[in-house]
Length: 132
Image 1 (spheres, one colour):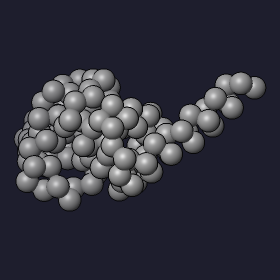
Image 2: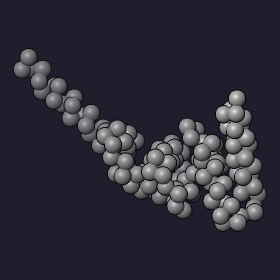
Image 3: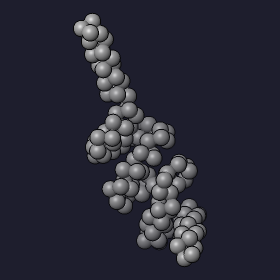
Image 4: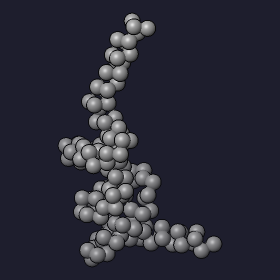
């Protein structure tokens, strides 16, 4: 039993190092532990350096959504999720959030119109489902 202990400790150490040095695993660990603030800060710093990391937009949008954020930084992430069609479980709600923001800004460009039309379509579908 004692001869196995060093191997077990080495294995645990290697797993801990893998989680610590892999940003994706560290983010998942922080979210799992409920430390959304640290996870958010880590994701934001990674995206500032590597904006092409599409898998992180979903995680950041989820944290922002659960924090009920509607500031410019959050809206930029929501817009990115919608434009790039990144899978997101609350996509319909994002259309509504971004559309409301566009209306408040008075935007009339093609992106704004497309988002507004999509939000209206989603709302019509939602209303029809709840009506019956």
